[in-house]
Length: 189
Image (tube, rainbow, N blue to C red; front, side):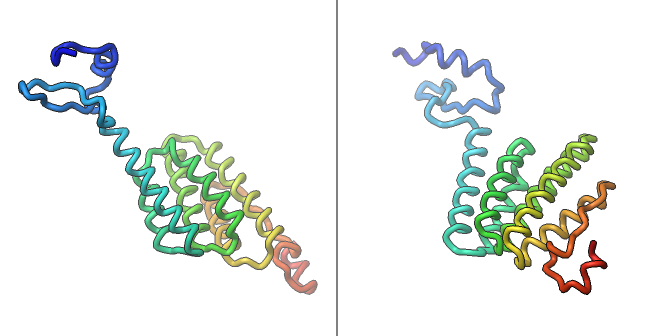
């Protein structure tokens, strides 16, 4: 085609916000839409996705990989709120399969904290409470299924604190959850 003619795709792209369109200067000095390079916002998102994938592979390859989870935490702080629910779900799946991975549990709590911070800034307290309750039930189920894992209790303690901060009654542990001697059962029930 002639360098100064536009295809229907070019016309559609020109209607987008300028920061989302990649352009190149041709040999005549004219700026043209670059259909080969993704827009800046897409490239940035793709970059974060690659970082998340790389840190996830490292975390899966080497059990309890603190550095991979720490990097993943840093990446999660760069993401918009819309991506946090998927990240939380992914971390829940990992935590279910790796219950003793304290770094993974910590990452899960950080993602939840980011979700809560956003919701509280938006005055969505009920939604924040629902997330905490969902996570408490998830963690409680893991504690009952896999008793004796410290990482699960650390996550439950964090959720307990978050519930207190939101003004919700935290779940009360029972003797069955704690695996305690019978003489302490009355104290915890």
